[in-house]
Image 1 (cartoon, protein in one colour):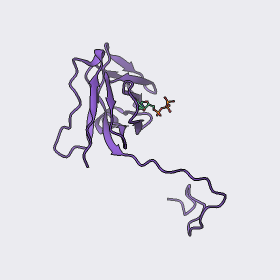
Image 2 (spheres, rainbow, N blue to C red):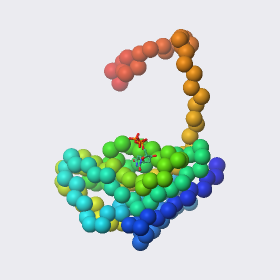
Image 3 (cartoon, rainbow, N blue to C red):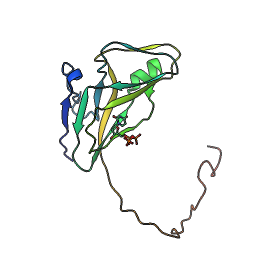
Image 4 (cartoon, rainbow, N blue to C red):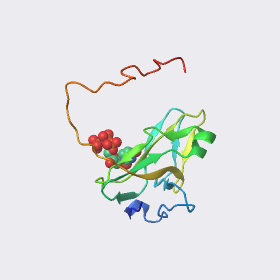
Length: 149
Ligand SMILES: O=c1ccn([C@H]2C[C@H](O)[C@@H](COP(=O)(O)OP(=O)(O)OP(=O)(O)O)O2)c(=O)[nH]1
């Protein structure tokens, strides 16, 4: 499957490199922090971090903002709303909601790789309201109803 992603560097992100796939089969594009000054995230604190980028995805695609495993494993820093959804018709700045779940303050510096973005196809379903749903073997339940694990 092929898709062209149009990226626009905003004024405050002009000096930062464009996201690029780091290996032939990489799924994610790293997103960089376009903060002017370092931001300190105290334990339990969150921040809306600018990337200095806006974009135009082709119709039928979304971008998912996901955590980087290194930040999570080493510092407990992750993306609060993971996966964040970037809609194909969104033209504002892409931002990352980082949260520090670790036990030490974490400093976000300009140009640091804070998250990754995965481009994925989207299916918009046709919505039909019904009074009765079709029967299935499973039926209702869920939320652990089949056992402890
Ligand atoms: O991690 C994220 C999630 C979203 N967005 C941008 C792109 C997305 O298309 C737009 C709206 O996102 P969402 O639908 O999740 O937000 P909302 O809280 O429903 O806001 P809105 O009322 O603006 O739709 O915000 C980001 O930049 N980063």
